[in-house]
Amino acid sequence: MSKQRHVAVVGAGAFGGWTALHLRRRGARVTLVDAWGPGNSRASSGGETRVIRATYGPRGIYTHLTARALRLWKEHERRWQRKLYHPIGVLWLVEGDDAYEKAALPLLKEAGLTFEELSGAETARRACAAVLEGFLAEGGEYRQLAAEPGARLAEGELRGVKLSDGATLVADAFVFACGPWLGRLFPDVIGDRVRATRQEVFFFGTPPGDQRFTEQALPVWADHGRGFIYGIPGNEWRGFKVADDTRGPTFDPTTGERLPTPEVLQAAREYLAFRFPGLKGAPLVEARVCQYENSPDEHFIIDRHPAATNVWLVGGGSGHGFKHGPAVGELVAKLVLTGEAAPPEFRLSRFDAGVRPGG
Ligand SMILES: Cc1cc2nc3c(=O)[nH]c(=O)nc-3n(C[C@H](O)[C@H](O)[C@H](O)COP(=O)(O)OP(=O)(O)OC[C@H]3O[C@@H](n4cnc5c(N)ncnc54)[C@H](O)[C@@H]3O)c2cc1C
Image 1 (cartoon, rainbow, N blue to C red):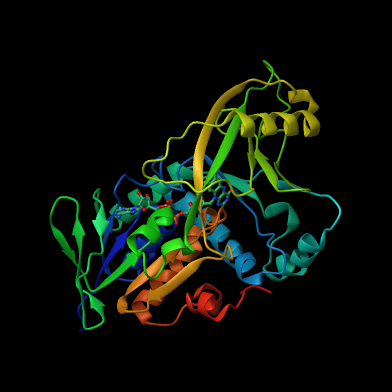
Image 2: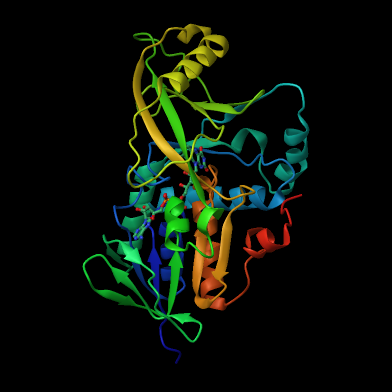
């Protein structure tokens, strides 16, 4: 009988939480560690709502990953008896060049996604907590501590990670799914390859009793015009969410203050007045400052550490990772336990070779 493998997963966000759960299901002993908790307010997975879209231009790997993730989101919603996914559709607006959207259409068909079904919004931070609960219920172990890989490399393997309570967590394999912190933990291998940018999200108040801006009346919308502005109605009564996908300035996810800036708010107001005249002059009722964890080409990073065969680095969600959590976790669990190589699109070597994945 083969010995049960012990895998430590650092980071309980969308990528790490699902990876831990899938590793557990594949029979590994799993310890999940997070410094601040699943979907905490500093994490990229923090926040209330995230969009599921399968429209990725010609990049079939993400369309198929979304299709798989959507099946897993629905399956787990049933399994855990809680509402995580709101199937309200997405209204995708295009101005001028629609090559990106056109290229996605055959891939959507190929992935078995009907256009009406492909998008929705989920409660993001609650979904991370639900994954943790599911993981614990299936025998996983969770510790709310910070972990550092340190310099404990021996014979091409990492022996253990140092925890913030002074203990060392020893395991056979390690997954670091540390979102915007991945570069700080691995300055040599990741460094600036995961760059956190400040992203502001605004929730505007709708007129009293006005049902037009609720999720019953309006889909998610994505305006791929001069830039890429998107929004989500409803948000559990937080207001009408508006966000600009343009990358903001570099941001420190640990120490950064999360107050919105007047200029970005003003731009959101102007956009709102233009596209949703009924909300012209609407008051701001909530705002959040989150961060994207961008890789240089905005594709995920899923690969083995080049100097440690038992260490996996998972991140670079680049503002679009959340929806993929269930399918990324499934993939990473398989790679860790079988030793298979990651898909070339996600490997670190693409940066060395200057190869752009996708297509
Ligand atoms: C405003 C905004 C809107 C977005 N909208 C969408 C969307 O609509 N659809 C979509 O699919 N995606 C969206 N994204 C992107 C998506 O949310 C992220 O790509 C995804 O959540 C990243 O998950 P992650 O697990 O890699 O990182 P995180 O959620 O940041 O998780 C990393 C975890 O690691 C922990 N950690 C870090 N370092 C350590 C350490 N040393 N020790 C212990 N724990 C540690 C942190 O506490 C954290 O919980 C959006 C992101 C933002 C900011």
